[in-house]
Image (tube, rainbow, N blue to C red; front, side, top):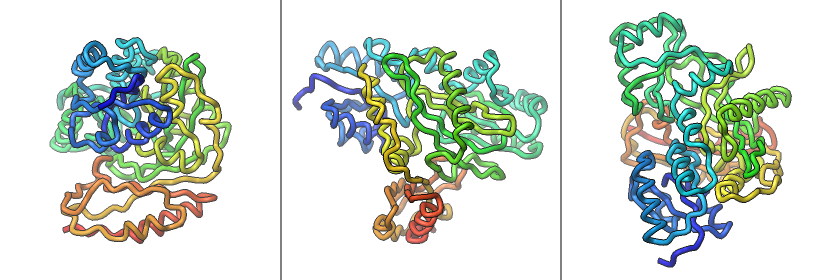
Length: 410
């Protein structure tokens, strides 16, 4: 294989990394992908692939040294987007002398209790919380925080191990929820915090190579407020919030990122707009997942946040037009929700894709796969992305696509 002189290291080999690889190629860059699975879908799109766990920081650093000193690869940037490997990306960039966020900021944002401690110390709005390891600690935390409360994992994504309680749970039920959250956490602890009510948002921002803060986009993230499970039911882009409220969200994002010491790269926040104002739930030093910046935002607005992030990662400035809305459409995502069981048949996909306004359909299951109960984001079987001239048209298109698709389970 002919070696390129300029290589972008893309962490993760899932479907959300394929658009990064495609954008990198348009910029004349070769791509190197690391992922624990040699069967990952991005492997076929990359110039170089190495089966290394994206969370194995030491293993990735060892690979970096081998590639630079023995293979002679000129690695010019490292990027994590749509995947929770921001610590690995930060450490690799720092050791390689490439543009990247401070690894300490990456760690604080990746570790939920550490981030909440940071928010509390700097008097920034965040939920009441307690980190717990035992059932007794969980009971004390529930008594302190009150009802309703939510139990979460410490450092995982897709709401794995997450459950809400609107009344005092029995001991066995709390024990089961605690075990699920701990099992989804590398620390084997869990987070218990108050449940806040309001519309949730993704706030995406990017610091350029000169340390200038750029507003990328805000997407609405509706959840079912009555469900005990934190399953996102769809996205709406751009946000329906008025400009004045959007400015508040961006201001809180920038203030938090500045205090964290973020001066380059992504600062992606998850917020909830309560009656008292915006509250910070999460922040990470990577671009968003959920097909947001990769597919939904480009389809609705034409913005190319991925290219801006790639240019930043290789130490170059990016034109402002990459973050300019050129389409002025409304984009929403949805899904079909078959009953749990083994998939017997999937019909209507071709018909649904032909519907005007249907931009993308990504199916994560095939015939023979098992559909699990919808208790977290990993159990969602598909993503349907549509756009319209307004929200009514977009939702009508989504409904047509959902009716066209039939998934039979047994």
